[in-house]
Image (cartoon, rainbow, N blue to C red; front, side, top):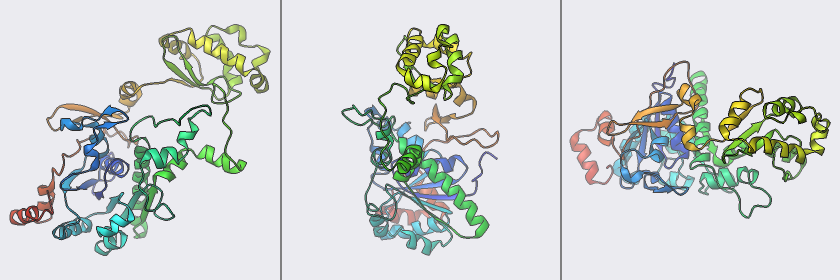
Length: 409
């Protein structure tokens, strides 16, 4: 069962990454996803020339990862929701769908008559899903957001990775970072809602906000702050725990980084010292207890820094592989895309672009049984307009009339 949502129909009225990435995951899982785009400009993401300073490739019109990632596997139609002639088409698409996805703000949804009441009037059984910045109730319900603002900044991640001495807060590590995490949350919610509708007969209304996803991602810190009654202090320490030298990131002799995550330092300290050529410290009384490590943390960190910093990455990796403590190389995006574990588990998947050439994309992280995930490229702008509308029963004459009226691309 590698496509458990086969037979489910999803109608997506959304743009950029947050909600569209959910549609891509649902398509990965077997759903039929139809994406409605503005008939002139298309999804706003199609116009992004750069993301975090990197070119997106949208000008090539062949294979732009910024479009492919959140839109693969869908069909696209260009439909002007503000034109009266387009309404019968939209109504029929809603009538045939199981799920309605949108990230339009409440005022825009009301203006376009795609709010909950209007959609449910046409299809009372549809699952209605809104991806928002800050939730559908409260003072910010009408405020637009991106993941950099709602998820990263307001959700606590930026503060969590920014040292107290920094002159500015840290940037997100990748474009669409919170959007893609949020997209998985939406996809999971849709799957649960589909199951709930099947067992109870009741369709759900879902709201997933970037802020809520951000708070969920940082919940350890948020929960502890709530218990403490105030913000958590920042520790000016090179490790991630002020009493554990075997956590945190250390630089190798050739300028790479190794992340240690040995959460039981007294257990792993002797082994680490023996493996890394500093056996004289393995049973040093200063480091045999947590209390001792806390009191002598600077000395312990210096030992680890020297052991790793005096060797190139390859040698460090070879030695640490003999041990039992968790660690990892800090990989760049190219290395992640070629990670042996991801490839072996089918999480880097080949897809054919519009010219039939092989490309690669990151798959969603959920693997069903032993099925091999097959991805299909993202649609070109409004590529399937005529095809989808003919499936609705419209003839060539009607299609021509709709095009002249500006209702479709």
